[in-house]
Length: 285
Ligand code: ARG
Image 1: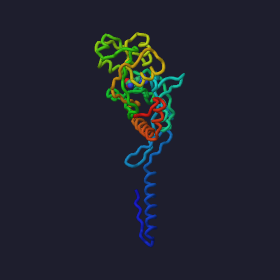
Image 2 (image 1 turned 30 degrees about the vertical axis):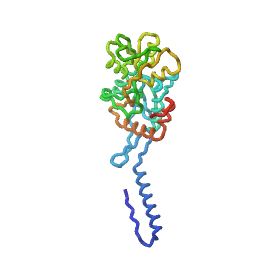
Image 3 (image 1 turned 135 degrees about the vertical axis):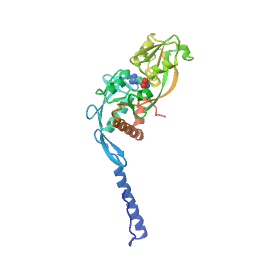
Image 4 (image 1 turned 90 degrees about the vertical axis):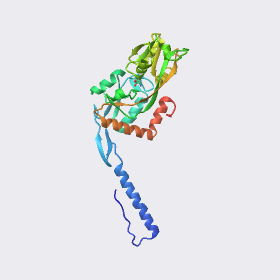
């Protein structure tokens, strides 16, 4: 950064202060513009040692961000006709706007998301209420966390639940490949786990009496049981302390970095809170 010296000369004391203030303002303005990163179409500013280099984002289709998601997981993602909507959808679209990329959601079965992303060519990002977990982090990268979650146990209305031992000999519906399934495997002895391809199918099976309980992410269970009395209720909240992140291929670290930067900006400028309020009716804690 340039340093500006002011010669004493014949300036009066007050003039000297004005000149000094102007010089400081000039130095600051030059410095700040020089450090600010520019975001262009599908590119992102990256700061390396004070210099700004513009990185072209690598996506499957130029100018687009293809997103894989199991879109039966409200309020994070669900289908309204043939249009995906939800918290993840709005957040991903806001991120896309920051990156100059057009976001398109495509529906995939949850437990195929990671292998398909790894194989490449179908979508660039997973946005699917996916919990950041060490075993998944061996396969793909995750962005910074964007939502805190827990599990829930759902049973027929009026069931007095006392603890996991009550589930011995029972059938528990879970969504295949989820943390809910993992929790049930680790914490319930002597029960039969019945895997479903999505959470809504597991709920339908409980309603029909084909399973005795469902373990599923708490905010989604809350949403699925919100309006209509389906004869089921959340009998226990299970504090697993999970955090959702967006999944990106390990071959595309620039994309992960760009999403993190956009996410940070959306949190700082209030957009994240607006989207949160829209889908959860409250502000994040
Ligand atoms: N958070 C849980 C997990 O990561 C469940 C996510 C299910 N998401 C979905 N869109 N079906 O395993």
